[in-house]
Length: 504
Image 1 (cartoon, one colour):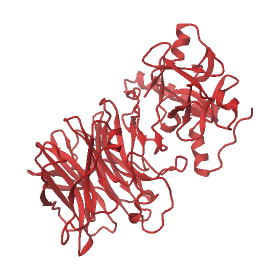
Image 2 (tube, one colour):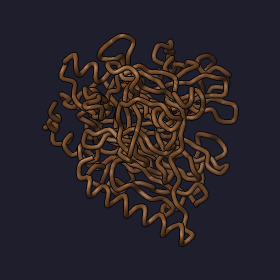
Image 3 (tube, helix red, strand yellow):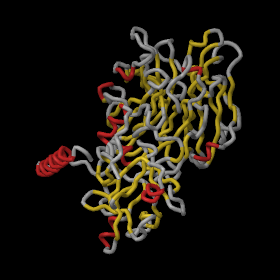
Image 4 (cartoon, one colour):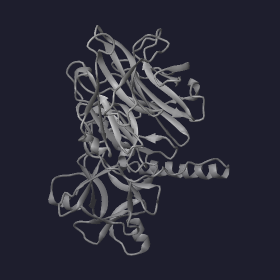
C-alpha cells in the first residue's frame, strides 16, 4: 500500500514538517546535539528542564455553548462552575451554573441584568466576567451609551447573595482610569496576596484601538489605585490585522510564573492570542518585568475549521488537576459585513498542557466534537505517542502539541473497537501497515478500517493505563520499540510496559 500524498493546502503542508519523521538525518543530528548539551549542562551544574507536568485526560464536547462570545468561567468553592458571556444582541448579562464543565452546555440560563433604556450602560453590553471577592459576587463588563454606542467604558455589578443567580445586583458604577476613553475587558487576579485589575483601553497619543494595562485594585473591587502600567501595545503584524488591537487580558499562574494572554487584531479570522510572562515574585507594575511572545500562541486553524480564537479565560477541570482554556471562535472563515454583527462565536473548552520549561502550550483550536487526549508511555514517562511525516513514534517534549493529540472515537471497523483520529489532520487515523504504525487518511476500505481499529483494554503493565489490541490481528498490541510504534505480540514484562499508555 503506497504512502499517502502530502496534503495540498499550503498551511497544512507547513504543519507536516513538524508533524507525523522525515528529515530523519537532521532530526537525529538535533537529538545528538541536544544530548551533548544536556551532558555539558549537567557537568557545569546548570539546571536542566524536567518533563512536562502530567494530569489525567479530560473529556468535553465542543462547542460548549453556541452564540456565546467572550466567555468567562469561574469555579467557586460551592461546587459550581459559573459561565457568563457576551450575547449577540449586546443587551444583557446572562449567567448559568453547573457542577461540571460539560453540564454548563445544558444548564438553565438566567438574565441577571439588562441594559439601561437611556444614557450610560445602554448599548454594547460586552465581555462580562464574574468573580467572588470578599464574600461578594462581582461582574465586570463594558457598555456604551444609548446616545453614543461607541462611548464604551467599564462597569461593575455587586451581589451579596450566596447564589449569584438569585438576589439583587447593585450597580457600583464605572471603573475610573487616568483617561476618559474607550475601555473594556476588565479582569482581576491575585498574585502574592495583591489584587490587580487588568484591562484594555485606548490611550491618548497612541494611534491604535487599544492597549492592555495593569494596576492594583483599590479598597473596593470597582476602584484602582496607584500606578497604571501599560503592558501591551499592538505592534506585530499578527496584532494589527484589520485593527491595531490588544484586548481581553486573562491570567494563569503556575511554576512560579504568571502568564497573561490577550487577544489581538480584528474579531474575524485574524483574531488570535498573544501572551506575556513574568516571574510571580517580580514587580508586576514594572513593564520590564514582562516578556512578550513574538508570535501568537493560539490562532486560526484551517485543518480543524476553527477561526478567530480569542477572548479567553482559564478554569480548572473537575478533579482540579488540569488547567482549561475557555475561549470563543467561529467554525467558518468568511464573514459577510462587520464581524461584530455576526452572532456565531461559540464558547469552547480545551486542556492546557505544560512544556518542560514551565510555559503553557495551548496547541491549536481542536476540531468540534470530543476533545482529544495524549497517550504517555508507561515506561518512558516523558514520552508521548506522536506522528512525524506520518510515522507514529514516541518522543519527549513534543512542543508541536497537536502532533501528539488524538481523538478516541468509535472504531472504523465496529465491533466495540476504537480508532485514534489525528487532531491536526482530521480524517487521518493511527493504522498499522506491515505491522508498523502510521497516521494516514482513511480511504474508506474495509482493510483500512480493520488496520485502524483497536480493542481498548486495561493497561497490560498498569490497570490505570490502557493498551490497544489490533482488531484484525488479535494478540498483537500497539507498543513502542526503538522509538517507533508497531503492533506486535507481547510476552515479557518489558513488552507489556512498552504496550501500556496513560491518557492525559
